[in-house]
Amino acid sequence: MNIRHVPQRTCISCGIKRNKSSLIRIVSNSSGSVVVDILGKMNGRGVYLCYDKNCWDIGISKELVGKKIGSSISSEDAKMLIEFSKSI
Image (tube, rainbow, N blue to C red; front, top):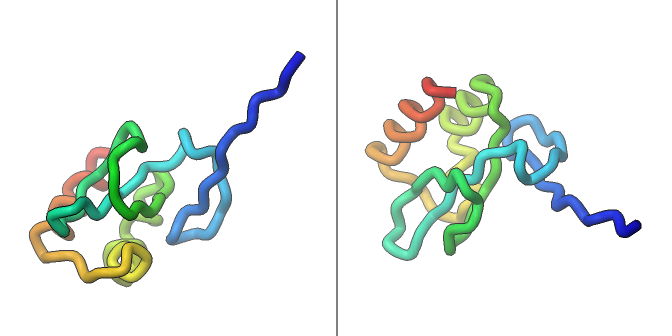
């Protein structure tokens, strides 16, 4: 019986390692905009956040998403992330 490897990722806000499937990926795509990658398979530099609204609030307000991606995010992208966090 083979045991499959489960990928682990770290939430950029709380720093807790979790299974990749239990986190939400945010990606900076080739055009420079930031999008939420629900499936976790998009191309581009990505960061992970928990399904916890507090992690999203910290990640957006302290600009951790932009810092970890390596570029600043636009105000429109930040608004989109805030709206997405409300649906969690």
